[in-house]
Image 1 (cartoon, rainbow, N blue to C red):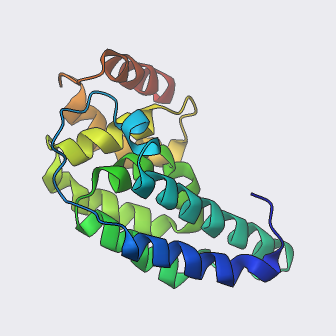
Image 2: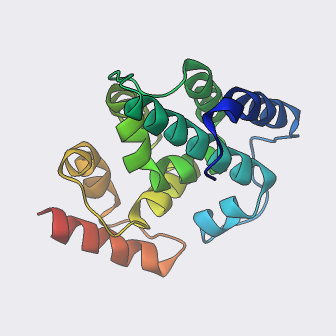
Length: 177
């Protein structure tokens, strides 16, 4: 994971090529109970994780070089992630949730906009996947807590497929409060 910066562009090209070549369907046939476990066991999930790690690593190296922007990730990586969430792919949403603090570090306004856009999808499998990923983390960040309030309120009485997701929701709300 700690590759020299000289390989970033090549790694990015390879990851984007992998994502373009994967045969990805929009609908998930099986009934998924644990979206994060499902996601990390798919080729698409692993490729997205690698893309997020690469974006974060590039931002950290650029920060050390004094190249600091409000938007810290490469526009091509952001555009590729936008394609994934626009296609309503479970893996993209589960990892959006799981890596939300990292993605927020990379681009705060992008996260704010996406969370507003996703509100119309509440009650769907993709947002359940987002919540499953997000609630997996034990840390509750003030900024993200505020952004996630509409989701907390909607999902407080929701019957998640995975019992622990509901418990983690209560945990998040309690810590944030």
